[in-house]
Image 1 (cartoon, rainbow, N blue to C red):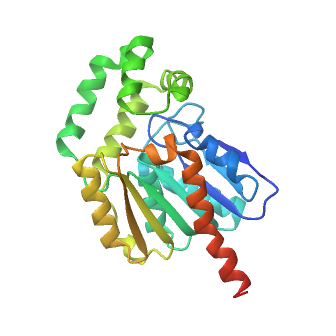
Image 2: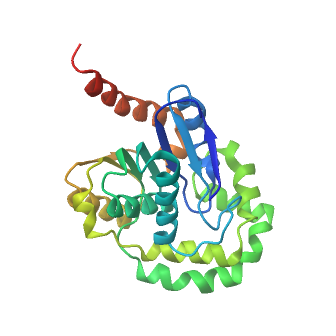
Length: 256
């Protein structure tokens, strides 16, 4: 597994898992801000631009990240965050290893399968994949994702580098994912975020996850589309993360 790292000399580690079809730059600005206090690790998910292996499953990617945490950080880190596909992988990690982190942000993660969308992915991408390298088509697709304009070149470059088989594989996994009952035993403080303009499926998924995890909160961000919190508002994301993690310092140091 390949990772981009910031603040390597910091004692506490946080991992941020990017969304499907994106890459580590999903969290680049957050990492640039947070490296002042934390060692920030940005894994490149399997099958994405810059990764070292094809995408097989959410479960395989989760197991790979757990093995990485075991090898490099003694089995646990302070914080983990994930967007969409990255959020699903994070949920699988939390279900498998209930104490892998003390805090987590799960953003815009689907936890209820979408059978119709799942069935349409292979034929849809089979006929349209060639258009991905068409710059005008990419611009229209990018605009439909409601991402900041300055991220277009990153998006276009890395989308063109994703193999057709990988794109179909991770999109099918994304639409087939069901959250595990073992999440009920997760010990992390989990913050769930969705945009106010997300699909009903994302909203229902967030409500389901909130019920599954007793130590969780759910925030609906007014006016936000899918993934906008981390992608379009990195300073706000970093500030909320920093505020959340400062509780760790207070609890560790005791009352003033």
